[in-house]
Image 1: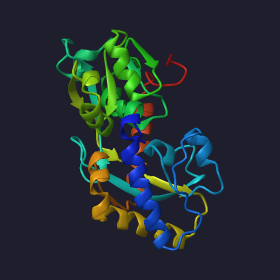
Image 2: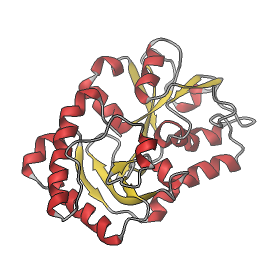
Image 3: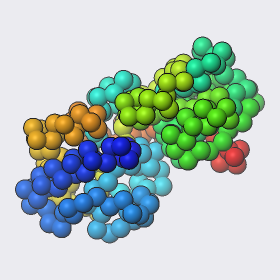
Image 4: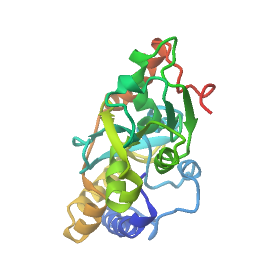
Length: 266
């Protein structure tokens, strides 16, 4: 989920350590390298999927029957609390808005309307403030958090919600992209996007995946990679914790909020 080009050496080092640990757990056919040449949706459909990471919205949405939950990573980023994270509601540094109410009529950009951090998390903030189901003048889809920030930099958007882990990584690795932005609020917290495996995986297989992740999280040889990736461990969460993500959407719909409905997003 956080595979910036600048981070790929760290991501590859992390995977190499995880792969070694999974083999020690007795798992076979563990690849030496990560698969990056296919869309994530294509990978998630594979019957031989070993391990991946999804958005929390995916695991409670259309992919809930195709993927099996493994664990929830914990990140060491401002806005994170153990396995929970939030999104940062960001505006250009020169924006007059100081509180979210002052963003009424602004141009919002989202990374995608099936993203929790970039879209669904906004619903909990703005649905109660909407009038006749709308709060923003317009909503556009950029395709990624990075592109949302680029849209604001070009003067094409006034506000976006950026996953706090992404924002922390960009502060470190692409400071020029965020230096002209300002955080006006945080969204409600929700579970971080989980590690997953293929649907139908046995309890034993999932236990071995968790065992390998646990070894890697405590491997001193992977400390630098974990630090670079802001990884601080993982937890096993009950299903109802992720159900909160769906509840955010349900509550917004109950209020008639439609800023982020596919038919209104351009």
